[in-house]
Image (cartoon, rainbow, N blue to C red; front, side, top):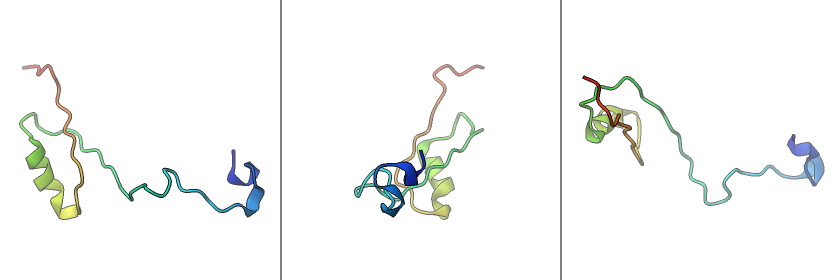
Length: 65
């Protein structure tokens, strides 16, 4: 439903998703990494592009050889 049709009509100010405590953040996904890649390696690879708050490196439980 467009904001103008929500309660209060078009004169209502915009709302921010997540409320006042929401941080400004971005997420990127990097794929096709080698199985030997560590979180530290990934952080070193991405550091030149800006601050890194959190890294999650998904690993396959079953490594097919």
